Length: 309
Image (tube, rainbow, N blue to C red):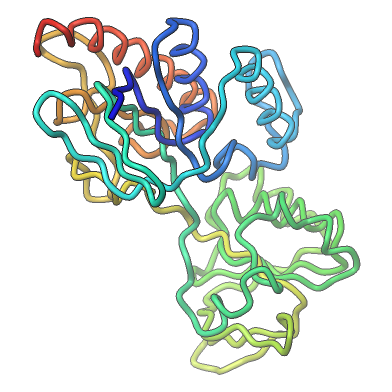
């Protein structure tokens, strides 16, 4: 089995940035991901990325991907199942292959949290969605529900209101919890109605979603809808590794006290970057910066590799 210098897991802003830096260093590396763009592709409007204001998330993904193509970087569409350190090297197993590498960068990001109610899995892709950016244009003149009043739920509701004839914003909490500037936009939008103190019990349908059941004030109610968008947060996609994590399942990273390198995990040779880590700033530009730091640290680590074996 040939050995790579570096394997990058994930192709969001952190993983793609790390890949560009790895390519510039001309090391032997591989990038593994089931998608390109990660959460960046879910954003309807990105207006805080310096130098590129007011750009749709999918367009920013294209720019990142075009930059990777300049270096002829290709993403292998493989799901990582396990990462284990054996001796001085690291073994990465996917559903298809087994790889050996000197170092890895975990930039696997996060995935949508599920409601875990009856009908959710059954109607996935048939009216149940976790991505308003992906499916908003399909909601023309439809009645839709958005579950969750955090920033992602508010952003999804505003986007969907451009296409749907009615948007119900639903949450188990009594008040909208997102940032004030988004909340103000929601309250001014005549297409959007908020339903608080509501607990979703079941998603109903025939071939496609046509209603949902919920409880409010100890009453069982039903709402007729055409689609439901679930925006109740994210969970880490890092179950494949046993590196140290915090109580939220985020990978804990730190600066090495021996080499002063950044983005270390508690296992030598395993670095991490982006939203899968415990950095507080969950932003595209922060993830890209962390990908850069992790790549530079991994390169320094790789340079010392020969002296250790």
